[in-house]
Image 1 (cartoon, rainbow, N blue to C red):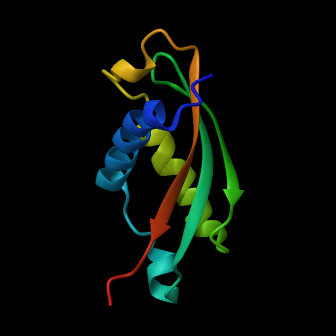
Image 2: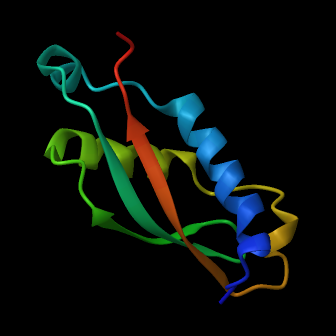
Length: 102
């Protein structure tokens, strides 16, 4: 498993960028003014496919937590991640923020 912080930066950054492009604030959360941060432990296979995703810290709102997992699944597999070549898997923590524009 990849453990170096330097090695993890590329796939985590790439995944974060893909998720931000796909993320849409859930309507129920927007209407209720819910904000929060979901912290997910992500494990990617060497081919960029999602092997597992576990919420390590909830936002406090099931709607936001489930949306974060949905967007993560939609953002994978990662393609062309050279950092994963030759690795069996990469595990890292991924924060997924939900903030309303005021």
